[in-house]
Image 1 (cartoon, rainbow, N blue to C red):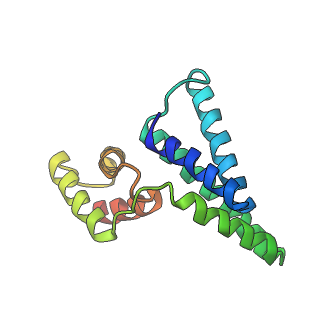
Image 2 (cartoon, rainbow, N blue to C red):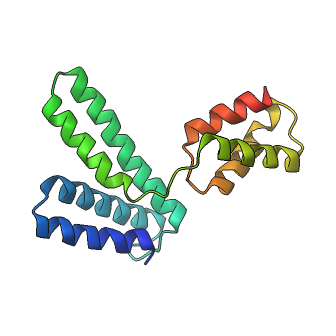
Length: 151
């Protein structure tokens, strides 16, 4: 069992004891999503590695961000604030994000190692960047920086 899954169980217990329904709902949804990812990988007992687990957490957060935006557009601040509270709970399971300067430093190393010269190398550079940043940098930021660097 990886550390995120272990932390999830502990956080669920804390939320139950504190009768924190918002956190408990978010944690239960995350646990279900992790179980579904395990089943999709092979079977119920398939072990997810850290990168796969982080990807599931990011997906859950993105779903809540999208829902919060839609609720705001519909003038449903009560539901929007609930989604934002769940985002805070789920964000605790993500590793600390790299700063833009740290990402740029890694990008320079990757470009030098691969000898990337232009846009045609973007796929190779993006793949290497995703491996090196281990989910600690949003894909959108990576794509922006790689695109700007290779332009």
